[in-house]
Length: 232
Image (cartoon, rainbow, N blue to C red; front, side, top):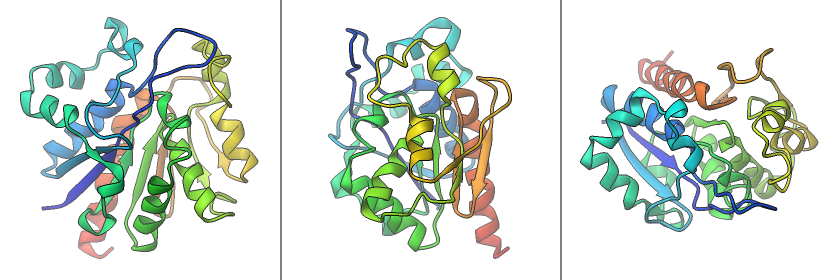
């Protein structure tokens, strides 16, 4: 059975506000059930282990997805989410791919987490895919820290500066993710209209722009694993 690792943020604080962040729930549940329904075994990990914080905004009615509702009735999935493994105990050898959901949290912790950066490079060096969505691509910054020049010329997608401004959080983050990735030489591609789904593939790297992109990124990852299995 193919095994997929999902790495979640452990960070909940925002800057200049009492508002909280964390995992954007739909960016976890949508891919999680794509993987489960395709017959994959999924392991959850986070820098601190245990239950990751959830962005309260992602639980508002207007942001609830079908996968969210399914998760609310899935005791096994809720138990797994509440008991994520500690990231520094994870080995890439044990998995076929890794997926990073978003929520604003990753721009604080996963962007600086050495274990995460090494893990991403280990997956790619072993010919295994790495996928990330929305603010999840912030984890690629930690890979850049481990291997300077890693991001130069990479074609990726991520939550855009325009979207950050439109959701009213541009003053509550330490940097704009699109800008930071571009500063490292990445070519950040986004949809023409904010909040529409957009996915980019660059070799073994699959990235998506926003919450609507989470499911499509997971499907693209599954397709890539299937092609690898067939030797295409």
